[in-house]
Amino acid sequence: MYLKKEIEREENVLLDTVKNTLQFAQNKQIFIEVFIKKTIGISVNIRNGVVENVEFNSDGALFITVYNKFSKGCVSSKDFSLNGIKNMLEIAINISKYSSSDFFSGLPDIKLLCFHPIDLDLFHPCELNIENIIKFITLSEKEAFKFDKRIINSEGSFFNSHVTMNVFGNSLGMLQNYKTTYYSTYNCMIAQDKNSMQRDFDYSVSRNINDLEKPEILGQKTSARAISRLGSRKIKSGKYTVIFSAEISHVLFSHLVSAISGNNVYQKSTFLIHDLKKRIFPNWLNIQEKPHIKKGLGSKPFDDEGVSTQDKYIIQDGVLQTWLLNTYNARRLDLKSTGNAGGIFNWIVENNNITLKDLLKNVNKGVLVTELMGQGVDIISGNYSRGAVGFYVEKGNVTYPVNEITISGNLRDMWNNIVCISDDVDIRNNIQCGSVCISEMQISGD
Image (tube, one colour):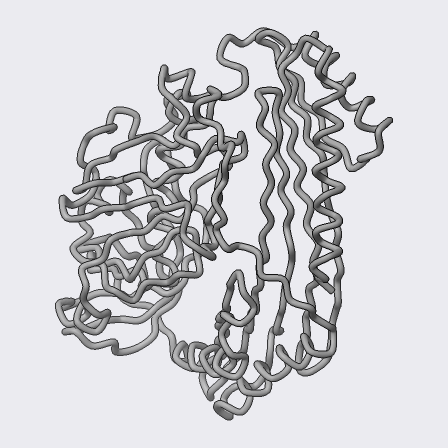
Protein backbone atom coordinates (compact mmCIF):
# COMPACT_ATOMS: atom_id res chain seq x y z
CA MET A 1 0.00 0.00 0.00
CA TYR A 2 1.05 3.62 -0.60
CA LEU A 3 3.47 2.80 -3.41
CA LYS A 4 5.04 6.12 -4.34
CA LYS A 5 4.77 5.57 -8.09
CA GLU A 6 1.07 4.73 -7.84
CA ILE A 7 0.41 7.89 -5.84
CA GLU A 8 2.31 10.02 -8.36
CA ARG A 9 0.37 8.41 -11.19
CA GLU A 10 -2.92 9.15 -9.43
CA GLU A 11 -1.83 12.71 -8.77
CA ASN A 12 -1.08 13.23 -12.48
CA VAL A 13 -4.59 12.02 -13.31
CA LEU A 14 -6.05 14.59 -10.90
CA LEU A 15 -3.89 17.35 -12.41
CA ASP A 16 -5.12 16.43 -15.90
CA THR A 17 -8.71 16.53 -14.64
CA VAL A 18 -8.30 20.07 -13.31
CA LYS A 19 -6.51 21.16 -16.50
CA ASN A 20 -9.31 19.74 -18.66
CA THR A 21 -11.95 21.51 -16.56
CA LEU A 22 -10.17 24.84 -16.91
CA GLN A 23 -9.79 24.34 -20.67
CA PHE A 24 -13.48 23.54 -21.14
CA ALA A 25 -14.31 26.81 -19.37
CA GLN A 26 -12.03 29.05 -21.44
CA ASN A 27 -14.64 30.20 -23.98
CA LYS A 28 -17.59 30.36 -21.55
CA GLN A 29 -17.10 34.02 -20.50
CA ILE A 30 -16.95 33.04 -16.85
CA PHE A 31 -14.43 32.88 -14.04
CA ILE A 32 -13.88 29.45 -12.53
CA GLU A 33 -12.29 27.77 -9.56
CA VAL A 34 -11.56 24.01 -9.58
CA PHE A 35 -10.48 21.88 -6.62
CA ILE A 36 -9.94 18.14 -6.26
CA LYS A 37 -9.28 16.39 -2.98
CA LYS A 38 -8.68 12.65 -2.94
CA THR A 39 -7.89 10.53 0.11
CA ILE A 40 -6.60 6.95 0.08
CA GLY A 41 -6.30 5.21 3.41
CA ILE A 42 -6.64 2.26 5.70
CA SER A 43 -7.88 1.89 9.27
CA VAL A 44 -7.80 -1.11 11.60
CA ASN A 45 -9.58 -1.54 14.92
CA ILE A 46 -9.03 -4.32 17.48
CA ARG A 47 -10.53 -5.02 20.88
CA ASN A 48 -9.19 -7.53 23.40
CA GLY A 49 -6.83 -8.87 20.75
CA VAL A 50 -9.60 -9.52 18.24
CA VAL A 51 -9.74 -7.63 14.95
CA GLU A 52 -13.14 -5.93 14.82
CA ASN A 53 -12.84 -4.20 11.46
CA VAL A 54 -10.48 -3.34 8.64
CA GLU A 55 -11.47 -0.51 6.32
CA PHE A 56 -9.94 0.65 3.07
CA ASN A 57 -11.06 3.90 1.55
CA SER A 58 -10.42 5.74 -1.68
CA ASP A 59 -12.60 8.83 -1.77
CA GLY A 60 -12.30 11.81 -4.04
CA ALA A 61 -14.44 14.64 -5.31
CA LEU A 62 -14.20 17.37 -7.92
CA PHE A 63 -15.51 20.80 -6.89
CA ILE A 64 -16.30 23.45 -9.49
CA THR A 65 -17.25 27.02 -8.61
CA VAL A 66 -18.36 29.32 -11.44
CA TYR A 67 -18.60 33.12 -11.19
CA ASN A 68 -20.85 34.53 -13.90
CA LYS A 69 -20.44 38.27 -13.42
CA PHE A 70 -21.50 38.50 -9.75
CA SER A 71 -23.58 35.31 -9.66
CA LYS A 72 -22.21 32.06 -8.36
CA GLY A 73 -22.80 28.39 -9.15
CA CYS A 74 -21.22 25.46 -7.28
CA VAL A 75 -21.27 21.73 -8.08
CA SER A 76 -19.37 18.65 -6.97
CA SER A 77 -19.08 15.15 -8.34
CA LYS A 78 -17.05 11.96 -8.16
CA ASP A 79 -17.25 11.51 -11.94
CA PHE A 80 -13.89 12.61 -13.37
CA SER A 81 -14.61 11.54 -16.96
CA LEU A 82 -14.51 14.15 -19.73
CA ASN A 83 -18.26 13.93 -20.24
CA GLY A 84 -18.80 14.13 -16.52
CA ILE A 85 -16.66 17.28 -16.30
CA LYS A 86 -18.51 18.92 -19.21
CA ASN A 87 -21.87 18.14 -17.62
CA MET A 88 -20.72 19.52 -14.24
CA LEU A 89 -19.52 22.71 -15.86
CA GLU A 90 -22.82 23.27 -17.68
CA ILE A 91 -24.77 22.61 -14.49
CA ALA A 92 -22.63 25.11 -12.55
CA ILE A 93 -23.14 27.75 -15.25
CA ASN A 94 -26.90 27.17 -15.25
CA ILE A 95 -27.02 27.47 -11.48
CA SER A 96 -25.16 30.79 -11.68
CA LYS A 97 -27.73 32.10 -14.17
CA TYR A 98 -30.51 31.58 -11.64
CA SER A 99 -28.54 32.71 -8.59
CA SER A 100 -28.98 36.18 -7.15
CA SER A 101 -26.23 38.66 -7.92
CA ASP A 102 -23.77 39.32 -5.09
CA PHE A 103 -21.25 42.09 -5.60
CA PHE A 104 -18.85 40.49 -3.11
CA SER A 105 -18.57 37.16 -4.98
CA GLY A 106 -15.60 36.36 -7.16
CA LEU A 107 -12.10 34.95 -7.35
CA PRO A 108 -9.38 36.25 -5.01
CA ASP A 109 -7.08 39.10 -5.96
CA ILE A 110 -4.45 37.63 -8.29
CA LYS A 111 -1.70 39.24 -6.19
CA LEU A 112 -2.68 37.04 -3.22
CA LEU A 113 -2.56 33.71 -5.07
CA CYS A 114 0.14 31.12 -4.45
CA PHE A 115 1.86 30.55 -7.80
CA HIS A 116 5.04 29.15 -6.22
CA PRO A 117 4.20 26.97 -3.18
CA ILE A 118 7.03 25.88 -0.90
CA ASP A 119 7.68 22.27 0.08
CA LEU A 120 6.49 21.78 3.66
CA ASP A 121 7.67 18.15 3.99
CA LEU A 122 4.13 16.87 4.53
CA PHE A 123 4.39 13.71 2.44
CA HIS A 124 5.94 10.59 4.00
CA PRO A 125 4.42 7.49 2.38
CA CYS A 126 5.01 4.12 3.99
CA GLU A 127 4.29 0.69 2.57
CA LEU A 128 1.99 -0.91 5.12
CA ASN A 129 0.40 -4.31 5.36
CA ILE A 130 -2.47 -5.43 7.54
CA GLU A 131 -0.41 -7.90 9.56
CA ASN A 132 2.09 -5.26 10.67
CA ILE A 133 -0.66 -2.82 11.57
CA ILE A 134 -2.42 -5.45 13.67
CA LYS A 135 0.85 -6.28 15.44
CA PHE A 136 1.39 -2.60 16.15
CA ILE A 137 -1.93 -1.95 17.87
CA THR A 138 -2.06 -5.41 19.51
CA LEU A 139 1.24 -4.64 21.22
CA SER A 140 -0.22 -1.37 22.51
CA GLU A 141 -3.22 -3.17 24.01
CA LYS A 142 -1.09 -5.98 25.50
CA GLU A 143 1.19 -3.49 27.23
CA ALA A 144 -1.87 -1.70 28.57
CA PHE A 145 -3.18 -4.92 30.17
CA LYS A 146 0.26 -5.79 31.58
CA PHE A 147 0.63 -2.38 33.21
CA ASP A 148 -1.67 -3.05 36.18
CA LYS A 149 -4.12 -5.74 37.32
CA ARG A 150 -6.80 -3.09 37.69
CA ILE A 151 -6.98 -2.78 33.90
CA ILE A 152 -9.85 -5.16 33.26
CA ASN A 153 -11.06 -4.39 29.73
CA SER A 154 -10.39 -2.55 26.52
CA GLU A 155 -12.61 -0.20 24.54
CA GLY A 156 -10.39 -0.78 21.55
CA SER A 157 -7.14 0.11 19.86
CA PHE A 158 -7.17 1.88 16.53
CA PHE A 159 -4.71 2.67 13.73
CA ASN A 160 -5.37 4.99 10.82
CA SER A 161 -3.21 5.94 7.86
CA HIS A 162 -4.06 7.95 4.78
CA VAL A 163 -2.63 9.93 1.89
CA THR A 164 -4.43 13.06 0.71
CA MET A 165 -3.84 14.68 -2.69
CA ASN A 166 -4.94 18.27 -3.28
CA VAL A 167 -5.06 19.93 -6.69
CA PHE A 168 -6.28 23.50 -7.19
CA GLY A 169 -6.67 25.68 -10.27
CA ASN A 170 -8.52 28.77 -11.41
CA SER A 171 -9.01 30.94 -14.48
CA LEU A 172 -6.43 33.45 -13.21
CA GLY A 173 -3.68 31.03 -14.20
CA MET A 174 -3.08 29.21 -10.95
CA LEU A 175 -2.61 25.43 -11.06
CA GLN A 176 -0.88 23.94 -8.02
CA ASN A 177 -0.93 20.78 -5.97
CA TYR A 178 0.44 19.23 -2.82
CA LYS A 179 -0.01 15.94 -1.00
CA THR A 180 0.11 14.87 2.62
CA THR A 181 0.33 11.78 4.77
CA TYR A 182 -1.32 11.37 8.16
CA TYR A 183 -0.88 8.57 10.70
CA SER A 184 -2.68 8.12 13.99
CA THR A 185 -3.01 5.49 16.68
CA TYR A 186 -5.42 5.44 19.62
CA ASN A 187 -5.92 3.28 22.68
CA CYS A 188 -8.72 3.28 25.31
CA MET A 189 -8.70 1.11 28.44
CA ILE A 190 -11.03 0.45 31.39
CA ALA A 191 -9.81 0.28 35.00
CA GLN A 192 -11.71 -1.06 38.01
CA ASP A 193 -11.24 -1.25 41.74
CA LYS A 194 -13.61 -2.22 44.55
CA ASN A 195 -15.58 0.98 44.37
CA SER A 196 -15.57 2.26 40.82
CA MET A 197 -14.86 1.73 37.16
CA GLN A 198 -13.24 4.34 34.90
CA ARG A 199 -12.01 4.66 31.33
CA ASP A 200 -9.43 6.85 29.65
CA PHE A 201 -7.55 7.05 26.39
CA ASP A 202 -4.41 8.33 24.74
CA TYR A 203 -3.35 8.79 21.14
CA SER A 204 -0.54 9.79 18.83
CA VAL A 205 -0.60 11.54 15.43
CA SER A 206 2.10 12.48 12.92
CA ARG A 207 2.96 13.09 9.28
CA ASN A 208 5.67 10.40 9.42
CA ILE A 209 4.90 6.96 10.81
CA ASN A 210 8.29 6.88 12.53
CA ASP A 211 7.25 9.88 14.64
CA LEU A 212 4.31 8.03 16.23
CA GLU A 213 4.48 7.14 19.91
CA LYS A 214 5.88 3.62 20.38
CA PRO A 215 2.92 1.23 20.85
CA GLU A 216 4.14 -0.10 24.19
CA ILE A 217 4.58 3.43 25.55
CA LEU A 218 1.13 4.43 24.33
CA GLY A 219 -0.42 1.40 26.04
CA GLN A 220 1.30 2.17 29.33
CA LYS A 221 0.26 5.83 29.23
CA THR A 222 -3.35 4.89 28.53
CA SER A 223 -3.49 2.50 31.48
CA ALA A 224 -1.86 5.00 33.80
CA ARG A 225 -4.46 7.59 32.82
CA ALA A 226 -7.37 5.19 33.40
CA ILE A 227 -6.06 4.08 36.81
CA SER A 228 -5.48 7.67 37.91
CA ARG A 229 -9.22 8.31 37.58
CA LEU A 230 -10.28 5.52 39.96
CA GLY A 231 -12.00 6.87 43.04
CA SER A 232 -13.29 9.98 41.28
CA ARG A 233 -15.77 12.08 43.24
CA LYS A 234 -17.51 15.42 43.14
CA ILE A 235 -16.34 18.56 44.89
CA LYS A 236 -18.38 21.30 46.53
CA SER A 237 -19.72 24.04 44.28
CA GLY A 238 -17.80 27.29 44.40
CA LYS A 239 -15.09 29.46 42.88
CA TYR A 240 -11.86 27.65 42.03
CA THR A 241 -8.66 28.13 40.09
CA VAL A 242 -8.98 26.04 36.92
CA ILE A 243 -6.09 24.57 34.97
CA PHE A 244 -6.84 23.26 31.48
CA SER A 245 -4.29 20.49 30.91
CA ALA A 246 -2.17 20.63 27.76
CA GLU A 247 -4.16 17.92 25.97
CA ILE A 248 -7.36 20.00 26.12
CA SER A 249 -6.11 23.60 26.44
CA HIS A 250 -6.32 24.09 22.66
CA VAL A 251 -10.11 24.05 23.07
CA LEU A 252 -9.91 27.40 24.89
CA PHE A 253 -8.41 28.99 21.79
CA SER A 254 -10.58 27.11 19.30
CA HIS A 255 -13.43 29.31 20.58
CA LEU A 256 -11.33 32.31 19.57
CA VAL A 257 -11.19 30.86 16.04
CA SER A 258 -14.98 30.90 15.87
CA ALA A 259 -15.27 34.32 17.45
CA ILE A 260 -12.98 36.03 14.91
CA SER A 261 -13.98 34.08 11.78
CA GLY A 262 -15.07 36.35 8.94
CA ASN A 263 -18.55 34.86 8.61
CA ASN A 264 -19.39 35.58 12.23
CA VAL A 265 -17.82 39.03 12.07
CA TYR A 266 -19.67 40.38 9.04
CA GLN A 267 -22.92 38.85 10.29
CA LYS A 268 -22.22 40.48 13.69
CA SER A 269 -22.77 37.18 15.47
CA THR A 270 -19.73 37.26 17.73
CA PHE A 271 -19.14 38.85 21.12
CA LEU A 272 -15.80 40.21 19.79
CA ILE A 273 -17.39 42.31 17.05
CA HIS A 274 -15.91 45.56 18.46
CA ASP A 275 -12.60 44.16 19.71
CA LEU A 276 -10.25 44.29 16.72
CA LYS A 277 -7.00 46.00 17.82
CA LYS A 278 -8.16 45.81 21.43
CA ARG A 279 -6.74 43.78 24.32
CA ILE A 280 -8.66 40.56 25.01
CA PHE A 281 -5.86 38.55 26.68
CA PRO A 282 -3.20 39.39 29.28
CA ASN A 283 -0.58 41.74 27.83
CA TRP A 284 2.15 39.05 27.95
CA LEU A 285 0.23 36.57 25.77
CA ASN A 286 0.97 36.07 22.05
CA ILE A 287 -0.55 33.71 19.50
CA GLN A 288 1.10 33.30 16.11
CA GLU A 289 -0.13 31.47 13.04
CA LYS A 290 2.73 29.63 11.32
CA PRO A 291 1.43 27.72 8.27
CA HIS A 292 4.86 26.70 6.99
CA ILE A 293 6.18 24.53 9.83
CA LYS A 294 7.85 21.48 8.31
CA LYS A 295 5.74 18.33 8.83
CA GLY A 296 3.19 20.43 10.74
CA LEU A 297 -0.23 18.90 11.25
CA GLY A 298 -1.82 22.22 10.29
CA SER A 299 0.68 23.29 7.63
CA LYS A 300 -0.54 24.39 4.18
CA PRO A 301 1.13 26.29 1.32
CA PHE A 302 -2.18 27.89 0.32
CA ASP A 303 -5.74 28.00 1.58
CA ASP A 304 -8.87 26.54 -0.01
CA GLU A 305 -9.09 29.46 -2.45
CA GLY A 306 -5.46 29.30 -3.56
CA VAL A 307 -4.42 32.32 -1.47
CA SER A 308 -0.89 32.07 -0.06
CA THR A 309 -0.70 31.30 3.64
CA GLN A 310 1.62 33.52 5.70
CA ASP A 311 2.98 33.85 9.20
CA LYS A 312 1.06 36.40 11.24
CA TYR A 313 0.15 37.40 14.77
CA ILE A 314 -3.38 36.61 15.85
CA ILE A 315 -2.78 38.00 19.33
CA GLN A 316 0.18 40.27 20.07
CA ASP A 317 0.79 41.52 23.59
CA GLY A 318 -2.78 40.49 24.40
CA VAL A 319 -4.25 42.54 21.53
CA LEU A 320 -6.41 41.01 18.78
CA GLN A 321 -4.58 41.75 15.52
CA THR A 322 -6.77 40.31 12.77
CA TRP A 323 -9.97 38.62 11.73
CA LEU A 324 -9.79 35.26 9.91
CA LEU A 325 -10.97 36.04 6.39
CA ASN A 326 -11.60 34.34 3.09
CA THR A 327 -12.17 36.36 -0.07
CA TYR A 328 -15.91 36.77 0.31
CA ASN A 329 -16.13 37.91 3.91
CA ALA A 330 -13.02 40.09 3.45
CA ARG A 331 -14.87 42.01 0.74
CA ARG A 332 -17.93 42.27 2.95
CA LEU A 333 -15.71 43.99 5.51
CA ASP A 334 -13.77 46.04 2.95
CA LEU A 335 -10.56 44.17 3.84
CA LYS A 336 -8.20 41.69 2.18
CA SER A 337 -8.26 37.90 2.54
CA THR A 338 -5.98 36.69 5.33
CA GLY A 339 -5.52 33.31 3.62
CA ASN A 340 -7.79 31.49 6.05
CA ALA A 341 -10.36 29.97 3.70
CA GLY A 342 -10.79 26.52 5.17
CA GLY A 343 -9.63 27.30 8.70
CA ILE A 344 -6.42 28.00 10.62
CA PHE A 345 -2.92 26.69 10.11
CA ASN A 346 -0.68 25.97 13.13
CA TRP A 347 -1.45 28.38 15.94
CA ILE A 348 1.42 28.64 18.43
CA VAL A 349 0.40 29.92 21.86
CA GLU A 350 3.26 31.48 23.81
CA ASN A 351 4.01 29.95 27.23
CA ASN A 352 5.71 31.21 30.39
CA ASN A 353 8.65 28.77 30.30
CA ILE A 354 7.68 27.03 33.52
CA THR A 355 6.78 23.41 34.10
CA LEU A 356 3.29 22.21 34.97
CA LYS A 357 4.65 21.15 38.36
CA ASP A 358 5.79 24.69 39.09
CA LEU A 359 2.52 26.12 37.82
CA LEU A 360 0.58 23.90 40.22
CA LYS A 361 2.71 25.06 43.16
CA ASN A 362 0.97 28.42 43.01
CA VAL A 363 -2.54 26.91 43.13
CA ASN A 364 -4.09 26.90 46.60
CA LYS A 365 -7.49 25.44 45.68
CA GLY A 366 -8.29 24.38 42.15
CA VAL A 367 -9.07 21.74 39.56
CA LEU A 368 -6.79 20.36 36.87
CA VAL A 369 -9.23 19.61 34.03
CA THR A 370 -8.23 16.74 31.74
CA GLU A 371 -11.42 16.12 29.76
CA LEU A 372 -14.38 18.26 28.69
CA MET A 373 -17.90 17.24 27.72
CA GLY A 374 -20.80 18.97 26.04
CA GLN A 375 -21.01 21.93 23.68
CA GLY A 376 -22.13 24.71 26.02
CA VAL A 377 -20.37 27.64 24.38
CA ASP A 378 -22.23 30.64 22.94
CA ILE A 379 -20.04 32.68 20.57
CA ILE A 380 -22.60 35.51 20.44
CA SER A 381 -22.50 36.18 24.19
CA GLY A 382 -19.26 34.43 25.15
CA ASN A 383 -21.03 32.41 27.83
CA TYR A 384 -19.30 29.12 28.64
CA SER A 385 -20.55 26.02 30.47
CA ARG A 386 -19.20 22.49 30.03
CA GLY A 387 -19.00 19.24 31.92
CA ALA A 388 -15.53 18.25 33.08
CA VAL A 389 -13.40 15.63 34.80
CA GLY A 390 -9.94 16.00 36.23
CA PHE A 391 -8.10 16.26 39.56
CA TYR A 392 -8.50 18.37 42.68
CA VAL A 393 -5.47 20.51 43.49
CA GLU A 394 -4.83 21.72 47.04
CA LYS A 395 -1.83 23.76 48.17
CA GLY A 396 0.08 22.92 45.01
CA ASN A 397 -0.54 19.15 45.15
CA VAL A 398 -2.77 16.99 42.97
CA THR A 399 -4.82 15.12 45.57
CA TYR A 400 -7.66 13.06 44.09
CA PRO A 401 -9.66 12.64 40.85
CA VAL A 402 -12.95 14.47 40.39
CA ASN A 403 -15.87 13.97 38.02
CA GLU A 404 -19.47 15.04 37.46
CA ILE A 405 -18.63 18.72 37.69
CA THR A 406 -19.50 21.68 35.46
CA ILE A 407 -17.21 24.63 34.86
CA SER A 408 -18.77 27.90 33.76
CA GLY A 409 -17.96 31.52 33.04
CA ASN A 410 -17.62 33.89 30.11
CA LEU A 411 -14.86 33.57 27.51
CA ARG A 412 -13.92 37.25 27.81
CA ASP A 413 -13.33 36.85 31.55
CA MET A 414 -11.65 33.47 31.14
CA TRP A 415 -9.14 34.79 28.61
CA ASN A 416 -8.40 37.91 30.67
CA ASN A 417 -7.93 35.78 33.79
CA ILE A 418 -5.24 33.54 32.31
CA VAL A 419 -2.36 33.87 34.78
CA CYS A 420 0.10 31.34 33.38
CA ILE A 421 0.74 28.83 30.58
CA SER A 422 3.23 26.01 31.25
CA ASP A 423 5.78 24.64 28.79
CA ASP A 424 4.26 21.15 28.38
CA VAL A 425 3.14 21.97 24.84
CA ASP A 426 0.92 19.39 23.13
CA ILE A 427 1.87 19.28 19.43
CA ARG A 428 -0.91 16.89 18.41
CA ASN A 429 -3.32 19.67 17.46
CA ASN A 430 -3.61 22.55 15.01
CA ILE A 431 -3.44 24.81 18.08
CA GLN A 432 -0.29 24.08 20.09
CA CYS A 433 -0.36 25.10 23.72
CA GLY A 434 0.74 24.10 27.20
CA SER A 435 -1.46 23.83 30.29
CA VAL A 436 -3.45 27.02 30.92
CA CYS A 437 -4.16 28.35 34.41
CA ILE A 438 -7.23 30.58 34.89
CA SER A 439 -7.32 32.40 38.21
CA GLU A 440 -11.01 31.79 38.97
CA MET A 441 -14.06 30.05 37.51
CA GLN A 442 -17.37 28.82 38.86
CA ILE A 443 -17.55 25.07 39.43
CA SER A 444 -20.81 23.27 40.10
CA GLY A 445 -20.57 19.97 41.94
CA ASP A 446 -22.26 18.87 45.15
